[in-house]
Length: 494
Image 1 (cartoon, rainbow, N blue to C red):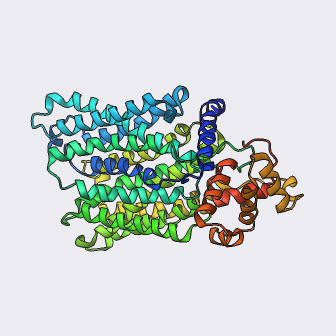
Image 2: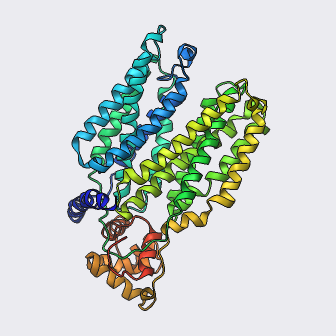
Image 3: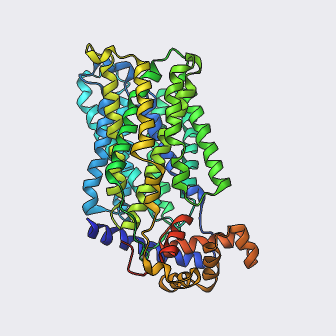
């Protein structure tokens, strides 16, 4: 597994790093943020597919021999598992032009097929075709998201979390722009969204990318069992809560909930841009569990006409969890030199299977079984308690910080910070100006202070910071400090 990651992912990243390094050296702009918002087209596509009747036959559910919503949830989850299997031979997918064509074709054809079939009255004989279209849709969906993950894993910037949040905020704009269109036009436009996302992704490969580091960066062990249990349990809670929200007697509660969630994500994105936290993953994780807990309780406590507040907070929390999964798992994949599809794909698979299990469990509440004796209020209260226990006992902030915490080595303490920076610069081939910037970063200086100290423009300073990140093989300030603190032994990461 490690060898596959090193041969596929590692070599591909090196090529891109060199190519983009030359481009940066020629003085061109380091980033085109518009390209990095292309993930928003995928997210809008997913939201429209799963939260509107564009491809889900809500009005024809009684004519299916099974629950079509559960079927779609299950097959899309299994799509990630299938792509993980393909990754052993084909990853990184973004290095293969044929994968872009396959991804765009599968997502477009699958969405179009589901959309057309779900609006046919006599759908009973066509159910097998709907299942086939869902399988094609699931493959395109999994490939597209994992390919975006492969891109995020290599970006040489400390702003990845901010790009993710703004991309998701952009997705909400698209969601509200398309959801009220006539059904035939909506099906056609939604089917095109993944193709647009794929095209933008291909263009985003020109962004500067970090190179596999030569720095000896020995991480603490990752608590994998805790991670997957947390993802599954939180997603089960999410799956259980959605039918309760949809059953509330409030007009257009879905639109109101999504509007609040979109505003919340935009507000957090603005906060990240203004505060520029040294560890974006922690800033993303901090509100997830508290917000989900409050959202679940507000669905019970508020009158039906205001229950959308609880729904919006829950949506905000679960989408933030998706972004956190992408941010952390792709960075770990890069540093551990394993396929992104393995860490990111398995994490998303666990989360989606949890959602499926929760949605399936919610159906039992309406079934003639002893479980149906539990009220929706009891289920939401129990779910809120589970979320609290997760955040206090199962997966804490310290567990997340351990992903970015370097093991201490005696050799790291034998040298001064200046000597460690000099060693890093020698190993990673930093220029004289980049070394000056690195020394200032090591002393905790901000970009504005670096501009004043070195008498350079802010854009130039950001370019040097991005170049340092790319050459060392990191993408945030916290990882830089960990590398410096560990002393840059120079044995090769992991």
